[in-house]
Image (cartoon, protein in one colour):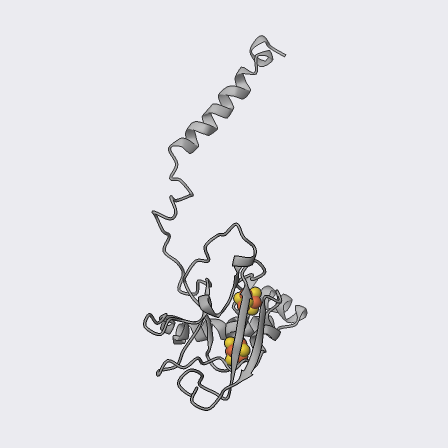
Length: 188
Ligand code: SF4
Ligand code: SF4
């Protein structure tokens, strides 16, 4: 080992060269929240429980979203709509409580795909961090869209999105052998 190597000079020079190279590279991070990245059209962020045209909640507490949820993040209690509540709830049954545990959710979007009432959608809203686990369980107060501040989900209902979902659905329903064959075909 030479005297320079004993002093780690080549290793230090190599290390400093790498550091300097990165110093002039474009940063991979941004200063969130002041700066925001452009999100993909299919971005899956915080859920919204939609209302219909007159403002009635669309969810009928059928539970299909909870069954579809691989993270078991959704819970709800169903209730019967009473006379005079027609403007509050679209159908005879509604979700008296509806909760999503955001710490469990993996934002897969399967709840949205499972919903037959177009009641639940994922949005481009980012779930803020919190230091309290209980506050990360979102109830109807955070999930149902405000009546005077509707959440636009038209992008998620576009044809482009439908095709994307169908392809994904098709992919999920393939057997392992199908996937292997398709992959081989793609590579040829
Ligand atoms: S996005 Fe996926 S993990 Fe999250 S609540 Fe819906 S189904 Fe469950
Ligand atoms: S959000 Fe949709 S799938 Fe889930 S309980 Fe309500 S109506 Fe059923």
